[in-house]
Length: 106
Image 1 (spheres, rainbow, N blue to C red):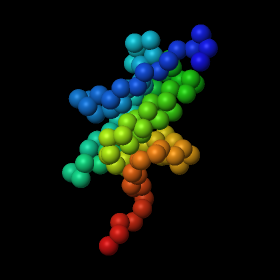
Image 2: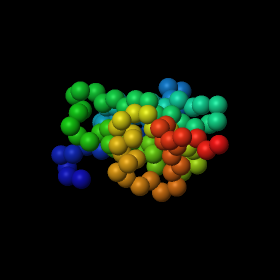
Image 3: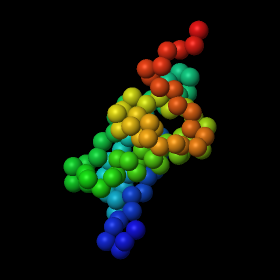
Image 4: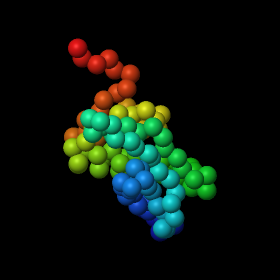
């Protein structure tokens, strides 16, 4: 990281059920999750403030969120295109993924 770049700090906000990305203390974006009856985290939406777009913040938020979910031993169900694309192109060690378009075993 160069001196002119700023770091995105990602935290889990359980009250609002989302992972938030802050840049210099300002909320730059977030990815929302909902927890189903089985305890799985469904990720329906990711959003970045227009003032922060083009900096890779969405990918940073999703990467940190997926790593945290893996550490917690939780399961992800990706509905958000940003989350789904990240998971299709990156391996997250220890992460359990249930793709919403996969048929359930009988």
